[in-house]
Image 1 (cartoon, one colour):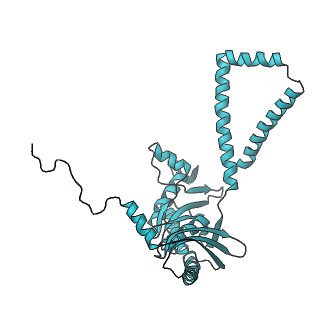
Image 2 (cartoon, chains in turn purple, orange; image 1 turned 90 degrees about the horizontal axis):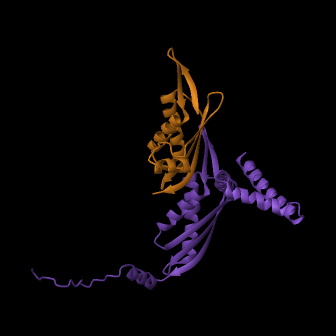
Image 3 (cartoon, each protein chain N blue to C red; image 1 turned 180 degrees about the horizontal axis):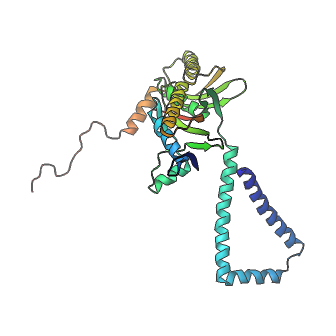
Length: 201
Length: 117
């Protein structure tokens, strides 16, 4: 209903603009009459107030309509199952959250991002990870795939097949890590010199 | 929306949907594994202007035949089994609403919006 109203709102606005443009192009609007009317709108205080308020109302309506339309378009995809008391839906962003938290617990992973898609064949997970250099990548990625699919099946109670695709985007060395640590803590073990220390007044 | 629930000798007793939402909110938070209930634009705005609500984004839909459907969007704590948490929330909310209002919810829809520590 809301979407239909928003579409009607935009249709009316664009139709009016189009009609005005056509009328202007075919000289259907008398220019002097138009200027006179605009002059009246400009001079009269009450008409100015009405015009201003209409403008504010149109802006608000436009925002509301765009929100409704974009909200419908970007409706979150979910995984759903039913319990005796009602339905349970899990947004895919919740699954992404879980994967990210799971990955961040592993010492081999420095950073991880996941995109989850629910398809007819099952759940498709695409992961982008940054690993530490000392990690055995084939072994670790295989373990990670098993861990993620197992955990999702356990936590969400999903029986559908889960595909986990891992993309190793970067491998960070130990030096890089220590450099970054050093950058983060600019004050090493040096003693801080306090000027005029020990002087009593 | 008000529900005309009971008629006593002195008059009608009406229970607002917000009351059912607040009961559901508090009951859902009691369930183990629930981190928090999601907020919506309305509850956030009310909180900002100082009107604290205890219903979050819980949506209570009442139908003509005196039945209610409760929609609860929530965030689950990391490490808990989500179907178990959802089942617990449904049970807790059903019991709490039945005890407090004598209404029997037709459906309690749980929407898991995220996982938090």
